[in-house]
Length: 491
Ligand code: BG6
Image (tube, rainbow, N blue to C red; front, top):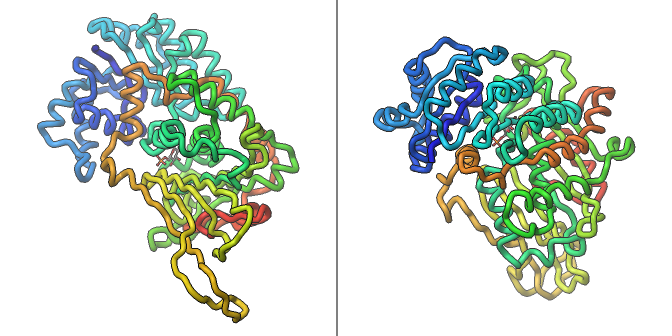
């Protein structure tokens, strides 16, 4: 099978940081189908060789084993081509069409790694140039719009010229091995299913913490914020993976149908619920990696008066028979205490206690997503026997339980150099596998759910400040404490 992969935004940030490294790894692993071309598209005046040199110079900055050797790069460079284009000019699409017909590859992938404001225009021009035939697949990077209306407008324009199965909406969290493991854990094992419900689960916590600040993306981030950047997509996809019913098979639409039902079942926001159960914060100066770091408003590209949130904590519920009444906590932010993404499923305590056990030490399943990838099952075991002194000084007999955990480390078990998220997703696009991509109705439903928060925060005061290097504003702990629970690091 031959392919042409056209990278719109071929000299942009995403191409350098994610796409080229992922394509190179796929090439190195021998998983890129032979006879393919990777065609960078941008405005710059460059020849094919000039583009290859540019990419080589970027790879030279890569450290460690991910950096290609000169021999490897030479072979990889043979796949690289460049096409200068002004994306507003019809003639330039005609030139692209000419380049693509030279080879007549069996699959043509158009990867839109450009500003989302250009998506509609590019897709319409692709169609006008006759490049939307059955062998074309279009990849759309997030963010797909900035609210429900703009998301719908993009989807409408795209669906006018392409069938849904030709559209690959990326949420790179779905490409992470740890997230695929979550599906494997739930639907490849019978063990958890009987207890995966409100009768046994006290609450679920999803944390996606980043220790980095906004880095060089201040201007973009200031227009976006944590709700749009992380919650509407990555966090809600995790909610789906945790909360969905078992699909009837592993085909894309069977999976996406079930995910959609979860999104539809999320409790709608009311003004009271927003006041109580939606906390937003913004980092101020603090400490990261043992060094003093500046606050968000001092970051380059950020408005010094900015009201953009860099932290969000929410309490919601999946209102259906399986989950009604189980609090679902979602938390994400920049410049938090550590880079740590995990899901903690906290089980209910025993119905009747015959042993003495530490408070707060209930059964818990922790799904670690990053930096480590694995499962921890927290249980209570009898650690010692005999007589113990109780808090009030009296001695009592009987077993004392202590928390222990089963720890399954997938990095150790399968190797930490597994196929990365972008590598997986790019190969899936080339192969036409849609399982790990988001359908338009899922995406719209996710926007619909976050929109009341966007609207309410737009007319509300500034976010709560939190010092860089902490777990966000104290209101986030207070919110969960009102239910009698605590975030996992506070236990
Ligand atoms: C991106 C966001 O989608 O995900 C970034 O735009 C964020 O702001 C990134 O840093 C996090 O991805 P990962 O894979 O590093 O957890």
